[in-house]
Length: 419
Image 1 (cartoon, one colour):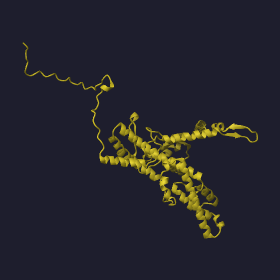
Image 2 (cartoon, rainbow, N blue to C red):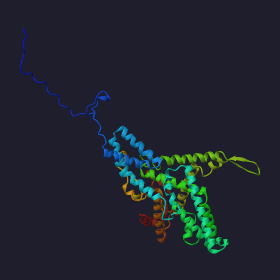
Image 3 (cartoon, rainbow, N blue to C red):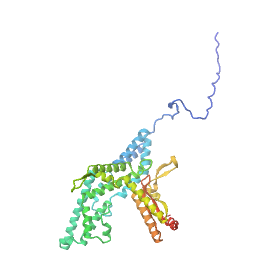
Image 4 (tube, rainbow, N blue to C red):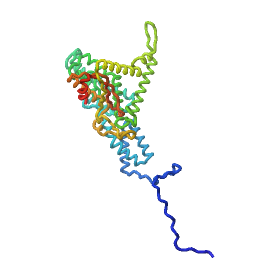
């Protein structure tokens, strides 16, 4: 007969106590993972903010627009739309957009100098992303408008003074130069002999040469290309694309541009020959260039030879040497480094945002400080000589290294002045 058991059963034994060590399985998929859940969708208000920020990004030049849109798409695709929203509203709108606006304000058209080109203001604002073809057309329009202005001023001068010969005087040419060059300064350039004009020392010959440049399309093309390069680089510095984590010393675009120009110049030199018309002898131009100080390797050897010569002269005079480094204050640095050793990271320097200084501004600051030091040396009858080199920080801000020599008795006083 079968036995029927009834009543309560003995409960199973408790789970084994944990050891406190992290679980490690035989395979990667054995590791514990977070529970899979549904991502929070963006609210209607957040969607409006995203569309507003994206419309702002779409107004930027292509090299910036593509940078931010690709980064946003990557974050949204690999993380979540919420993370993409935080990137647009926190990283871009709060941190980067004010820096971009400040850089554009520093480089925009100078309407205080002249209102002649006010209609070109929006076109000039697109200069950082302008291609060469459009830039050349823009340069031609500027030169033609200045030429028309010059003709009108000449006619007005002749009507006021009665004879065309009156145009060929220092007074007339200074008057014409002042109006034409003043209008050209709206594009943030410094016309030739502008300082002489302000001092009242301009001659007719100087006015002719300066005005001729303002009517030349190629001269304006060269000026606008230089401004485009500086403006383009300033924007990349502002958004943090120039540092040790991204591209040290200069942006990737600037490095590619320099390499392309050097390669083009090298190909041009290879295609040219030097010919002696009397003997008919021909030699390659590139061989002469590479044998001169235009060759970077030879130029470096010339520098080393100069340093050795200065050291030998200082030793013969019994002078002592000093190695001095001059750096700009933190407000000239767009980024700052936090941490030590391998944990060092790059962060945006918010003290830079107010002025948005570029490397050229930092170089002017160092030149001004050095001029004050030289004045103090001269006032105290201190003799200092040596060599100076300029080197960029990882964020493009320049600093100076100087190898100076002086009399041993004057060394402490010189160091005190420099400090």
